[in-house]
Length: 277
Image (cartoon, rainbow, N blue to C red):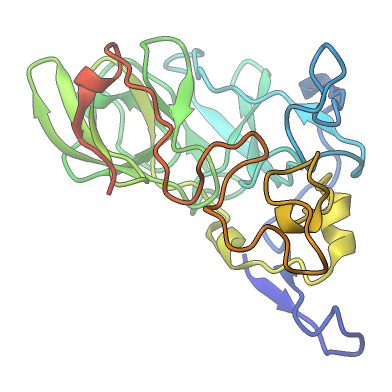
């Protein structure tokens, strides 16, 4: 894994920094592990835009990822590390001893030929890529793909470079520090994968030009004060003056830039030991 830079023979290449994809060992996905992925263009079922700046982009197929890891106590061998256009991390193709193939999120350091296992017992070696209950993971270990509800499948720490850490165990719960800095209680019977998610260079990449952003399905973002009054509270006015210097708000008039929008959840909040800073 590394970052590829270019000679500035064009203005856009001067700033472009993309992945060299050196860890990718297979270019085409498994046909049985892909599904069609329909685009919405940010529209809901009424045809109204509910997610701005979405549309276009290269056509994709969804890679079916095994977030549950429910094939227990059967070792699997890593056949390939592949690119997934639907997530920031790489994915690993596993083949179990009975011939079944699945995809998982590829942890840092996992390579072709390595063996991983998923279990609910303690008789398994603690090594990168193996999935087990938090009860059997040692304190201080880094984990990812963490379940919040036993058997539901991984929900936390799934993006490139993410990892959480087990800080303590008390009663039926483990104290987990998640990537945001929040410390929360998760039941010891919930499972997680050992290690850190790979492709840690993802945050250092630079697209370099507007066109590459369009390839990813991201449309241009327009400032509110460059719009008309009907389109945004900051719109209108003469020239670049706009509406003077108002408090920044969303297109619907809600304050932004620091305004708290999180709703209190009595079912979730009781598991939070320390809120994120």
